[in-house]
Image 1: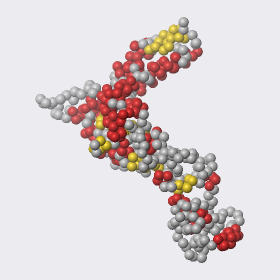
Image 2 (image 1 turned 30 degrees about the vertical axis):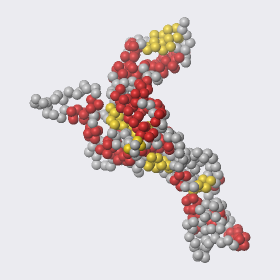
Image 3 (image 1 turned 180 degrees about the vertical axis):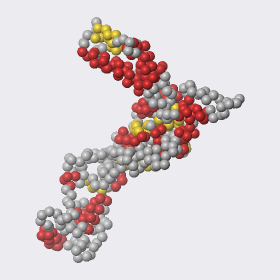
Image 4 (image 1 turned 90 degrees about the horizontal axis):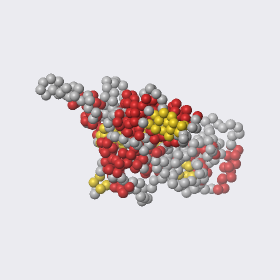
Amino acid sequence: MNNEYEDICSVCHRTESVAGKMLKMSDSLCICIDCLQKSTDMLNQSPYKDMLGMDPAALAGMFPGMGGMNNTETPTGIQENKTDNQATIVTDNKEDEPEKKEEKKDDKPKGPAPHGTFFLNLNDLMGGNINPRTKIKKRNPDEKKEPIIKLKDIPAPHKLKAKLDEYVIGQEEAKKILSVAVYNHYKRVATDTMDEIEIEKSNILMLGPTGCGKTYIVQTLAKLLDVPLAIADATALTEAGYIGDDIESVVSKLLAAADNDVDKAECGIIFVDEIDKLAKKPNTNHRDVSGESVQQGMLKLLEGAEIEVPVGATSKNAMVPMTTVNTRNILFICGGAFPDMEEIIKARLTKQAGIGFNSELKDKYDKDKKLLHKVTTEDIKKYGMIPEFVGRLPIICPLDSLDEDALVDILKEPKNAILKQYQKLLELDEVKLIFDDSALRAIAKKAKERDTGARALRAIIEEFMLDIMYEIPKDDNIGTVTITGDYIEGKGGPIVEIRK
């Protein structure tokens, strides 16, 4: 057995750090002292103990040296019953042992077991029909080891933003805010304290329309920093005791992303998407188990606390091992589209009278593309987020909606741009794929009309590339395919050139 990982009790499924010392009965079967003691107590108090074929003291003697549980002492916690039919006092008189064995041999029932009695076959537990043991890496608080995040390894904000520029187009202000916030957070994690001044954790709230790159930016940040990342959907979360994922399941996903290494998980990033779906429902008389209750349940996670989380599952039950994770150094980033937030902002900005000298036109902010950048915590609370929740997300990061120019750049500029992916696919067939400027502009225009952000780009290209990807492998003479704007608009076809 690898000493790097904790043992797990095969009965109660608690880890070694929770249950204490384990008895290793084989490489795949362990039992904690509590479960062994309970089993001994139950066997001793059973009216059929003489029929089970093993004395409780003999069972305790199988594991000498464990907390006084041996063949010369009464197991801890076993009460001595001095009635005639349940004598449980263990003696050291070895001359009586043969007589006891003969009595047990004579009294052993022949045939089926008595009603209410069952036999536990340990060979079944050790067989290959059970799921493999979930491995959890050991944690030794006394052991001094190097910190996972080192101060010298944290890139400066300008370097972090430069890296983001290679993958993310536009969103200049959002990338700047995130670069500074992430840099300060991991400086706090690496140094823990600075001149005995404890630095508080700064979680982030991202607001932006669908398809503007919220999730993609967070994924890129985690990849650049080489830290574990868990992406959770807030719509699946419910209050404890109801059908759905528990709030602790988001930490369990991070633990799985860190390969069940608790120390590594405690320095990771959790991105909770669709956070706007947790807003309080107006005018509801029933219990809101997937809205305000989830916000209240997430408060302790955002603030930083010791959380017991299931390992390898999304909900707590008796068959899943549990471990403790401290969320103090976990960076929480919450993102949401927050539809109709612009209306709340406009109502706040135009609350003056509609007539008179100081009046403002109601449509003054209708064409303001940066309206979401004027959002305040009051607007977010009015949307339906509780004040305690908003207060634990001090950094607000608004994102812009994508215009046609940004969509064109997204098609061709990033390292893993969509066009580069298709060009790579056709290179494998020794065919060169070219998109002219009119085609890029036509694709961006169609994507803008769909109003789903950058997600619409791939859907449109998939639609127009279907026939090309189907026909090209038929003819080995095709050398170049040029996609034009007329083909995208349905007025013509692609230009195909034969290989020279």
